[in-house]
Each structure stands twice: as C-alpha cells, then as structure tokens.
Image (cartoon, rainbow, N blue to C red):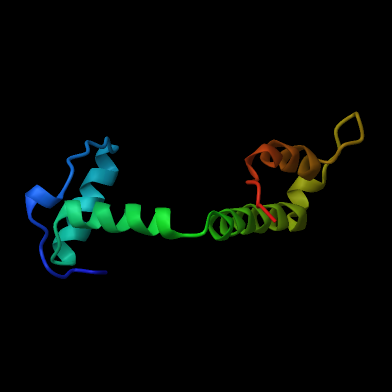
Length: 105
C-alpha cells in the first residue's frame, strides 16, 4: 500500500461509486485496519487495475476459469450423460465459455 503524503482536496477530483453493503463494510474495516482512508484504498485499487497490463489481468481471470473447468472434469458427479450423449461436465463447461476474456497478442 502507498500510504504516503496526504493529497490536498484541490488536487483531487470527486467521483461517486456505489458498493454493495457487504463491500462497503469490508472497505471500512480494511481501511481502518490499514490506517488509511477509504478514498485512499479506492484510489490505490483503481490505480492498480488501470496500471495492470490488461493481458495480465485477463490471463489471470482465464486461469481461474480453467481451474474451475479442471475441477469439473475431475469430479465423477459430472460424468453422467444426457440423452444427447453430452456429458454433464461438457454441458457445464459450455456455460463458462463466454466468460473467457480475449488476450491480445
């Protein structure tokens, strides 16, 4: 975390964000536990997301989906077959395919 010199309000631009109540509570606790303002935590998170190479973020996201698919393929409960011949695992995996993110070459 970059909890350094405080920024003066004149050097900042106000932005409103909406959080689910559970996330707002988590943000409050996280900021308090890290001796930082909620705004500082939000700024750092936004900076990290914008500074990260989109390919790195998308590759990590896709790795997570592939890990889920691996678990599904190994679970014998998904080995059943529909009358069409398609396995349960293939059916569930097809539901995930649209979630994969494009990685630019």
